[in-house]
Length: 155
Image 1 (cartoon, rainbow, N blue to C red):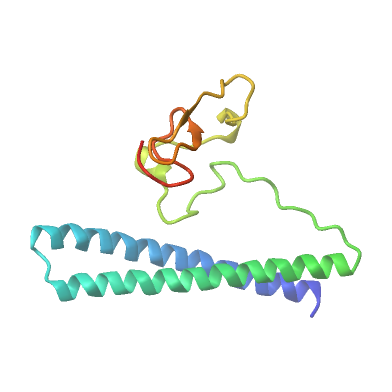
Image 2: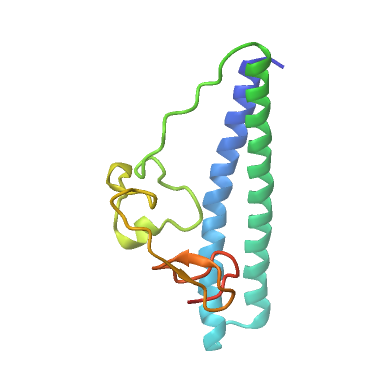
């Protein structure tokens, strides 16, 4: 298989992943709506479970295609390495380039567009490294953490 064929199959699978992400987002929103209606008693159990099943099937398909994309990327990298070519990483993504990634885009909900040049990493020397102990397992966590990274309990 030539590098061009690898690139083509990667593009096809990546496009399929993008489409499935959009479809799964719609199924997720329908499931959340059905959940709220079910809690109020406006939707019967059969309709609620049907929305749940649709969402779970969509997520399973999404996970499968995501793994397929990873295998295609791995194959493309191995092919380039075997031919002595140095793989060139794609341009870095900023918050504006990441539009549509993930199932829930928090920036859309909050009306904010992130810019990576304005973000400060947690390990920055300008930010003090305050820590505290988890109230359940006593592991060290950031001072402002709402949940423990180790046990997952609320703080």
